[in-house]
Image 1 (cartoon, rainbow, N blue to C red):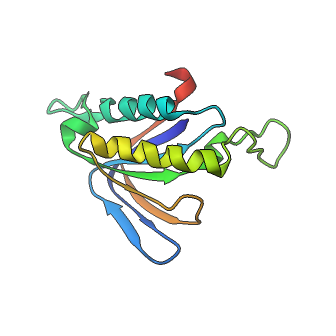
Image 2: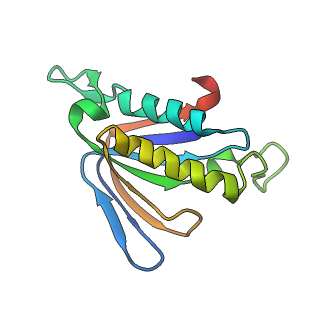
Length: 148
């Protein structure tokens, strides 16, 4: 799995049917699922993200996690995180998992966040969505489960 994690003041996603899902202070997580990912991968990555100390303490140092802040998470499915541009100008997405594998792991990842007490919202898997966010910092972290 790959995740692009942004610390946000607020973020929202508008789904194709017009529904909007939003969070306040917390993390906007773009999540890509790879061909070899498993439920264990989802568990390890979710645990890493909720415990990342990327929120500032009173001394303005990164020392607090999403759990410490009681922040929320907005999880957006993003297979394009597995794009390879080595062969030319058109991205190759063959390293991304097929939807029948990716969807359950994306949903499992979001449920794992909720199980820790994080208020989590999600986009709509495989849909074209409009995402708005206010990056706080800015703070943006790239995570790859192969490197955990």
